[in-house]
Length: 360
Image (cartoon, rainbow, N blue to C red):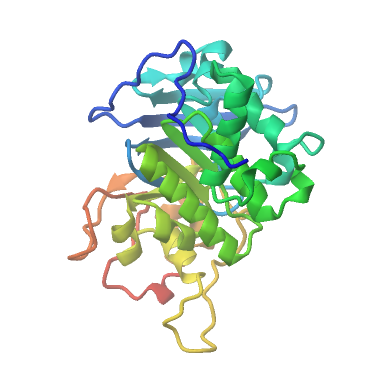
């Protein structure tokens, strides 16, 4: 039996979707996440503001521990209720998600906002078949018969490139490869045709061939449904092939925001320069050493006291060590680099003409 095609079902009780206007589909303003403990509080996300327009792919980039995943969980409303304080605004289609009750947010998860989690082995239930886990989403949000749901599940697996989808529905996560498990997570996230898809490190622990396939699946499915994608990753190489706009995050704050072409042509923040310098390039001579970022992500200072990147930055001076920089417009990108809508959080930004290898 092969999967049959049929029109995308409409969520039970859901009105037709509103066509997005000029306002971004997702608008985050001054998002702050504080974790409380007996010893001290930890601010994992601080003053984060970003926009995800409809039909665009936006990246949130940074090293492990920079606050990317916490930002995504705060947007989804999946952080623990106790011991966590979330402030700011998270507006989805003009509505502040932080003011909604749990039932209202649950109604949005799936049909409107969905998330592809980082590790498929821990995100999928190991003792439940793939078909049951897909069917659970459809039963929750759609008024379909059992046969229609089964056909829909097979269609979803076929859309994400899994061969023999009817057979795979009867299998367990451990019977699938890492790439297939990641595709299953994407299929679950796309089951309700969400307007906004958040992908948290969707290519982690996958080899480069499977990475390319998963990214192609994400880009194609988002483009076909005219949705928006918020891609969370530490790999700027992944961003280069998928995203339109890039937000670089360090120690809980965004330190640079720019269109992709402008950021890759002329990065303004030393941290962005460091991330780009650590990527292997095919156009460099054999044996050319990579330029790592000095120090460790744990080697930081509070943003309230100084620039958090100053302990690792070769451009830092007394101003950087005693004052906190604001996220400001500029500098202008070189001709042909793309749009001019860019910001950076730095007292001594890198000029476009300066050699990048000397910044760290």
